[in-house]
Length: 181
Image 1 (cartoon, rainbow, N blue to C red):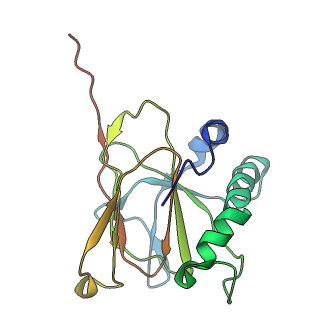
Image 2 (image 1 turned 45 degrees about the horizontal axis):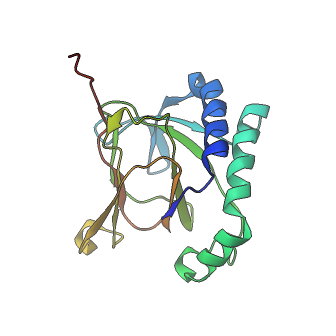
Image 3 (image 1 turned 30 degrees about the horizontal axis):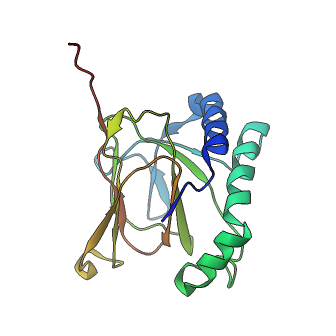
């Protein structure tokens, strides 16, 4: 877990960039035996794969790439072989997806296919107007292997790095309602 990953200025710049493309986001899909489909009982949120390579998505990708491959992060991750994104066949290859969670959105327990390591970055407009959206991480690849879980709170400008093969989920998001008084 890396707090203040981008810093407040870059975090705000990123949020502004995301706002310009949020209308391009679609219902998140799952891949079931190679077939993409939506399943709102398993996953409910919006996504935009950032491999469209236009000016808007390249700007977002460049912010993350600079953060992911800075010497301090590389040195810290290199100390944990299970997270090392530099060595091996996954060397510096990545897919980036922007996921947006609104009220009642969630993602049930799953693993991420097609990658060695997953990097999740939390960002939102402050002050925080929701509860939930927290990240739960298992210590196993399968439900029967899950001996314990860790809950990582959804905090603005927080990065979570973990082996993609470990089960994880996103808890339901609940909008906070202000009470007039």
